[in-house]
Image (cartoon, rainbow, N blue to C red):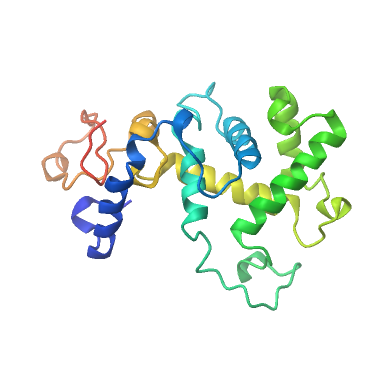
Length: 224
């Protein structure tokens, strides 16, 4: 994570835009998604709540606005820099990088639809209405490809690819600077003891075995 002194000039408009949009001050209960449809949003809220649950050692995904981060990233071109022209080899070595034929936006749209189909087939109700244990079981089945998307009519996307995209984005939203919509009030940074984007730490360089006493600071200058 870059310090404030190392933030490139190109990022300054992003800071201004974040301030204008008020993403740091958004309340999840009042947020209106800009990428997800209303039914998709209900799935994302429920899934994020289980991917980073509130009963852990730190705040949960919903406490830190992780769904807001994901929605904003998808709306603002997440994956636009990924090479999509092919050829794509499903059995290629991981060292060869991304081989999928679905953009992140397409993966979410398709993955949510098929995950909901699987929930309906097994439980007779949508994912967000399941008990916590059943939600966890379904997410695990996605992760392990025990839910086969090809059997649900989509051979081009693996359930694990959708799950990994969602989990990775949830982690990013949990730990990113609040200017991007997640990590509300820097709660995740507080939980892990990350100091954030302070400009300098010169006064602490020679202080060994001393706990850093100051809370985190966001790129916009807000303090936790």
